[in-house]
Length: 134
Image (cartoon, rainbow, N blue to C red; front, side, top):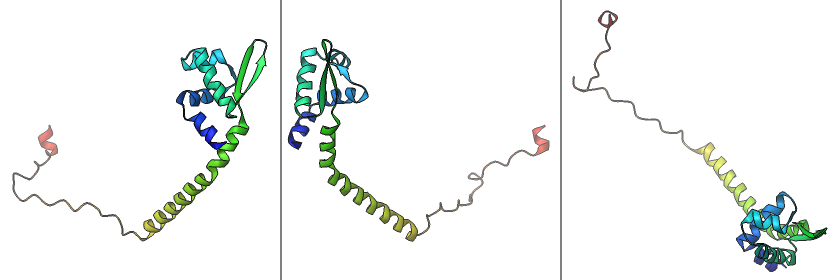
């Protein structure tokens, strides 16, 4: 089943449809307009998502209203859980390493002191005295 889910999500139009349905259930015409595709194209992609268990459809008068199917996403989330745990473990190890190195690192180097000018040309002009300003 995971192959079907991943295959359905491989298409950018189908991911865009899921994103739109995440906000609220919608009719095919609304989805087609929002995504800038024809209604037959939207219907084709929605059929793939429905067959993969990612969306469900209900009839309201003459319209078919599509909505996200949480169970399909739960299956995908279950498959991703071990990978998420792997990344969390690695990020925790990186954080611990950074904490250790921050405690044992030598103090940060400061800029070397500015050298004193050696010649009159290198010396900055003296600021005017109070009397010279007036």
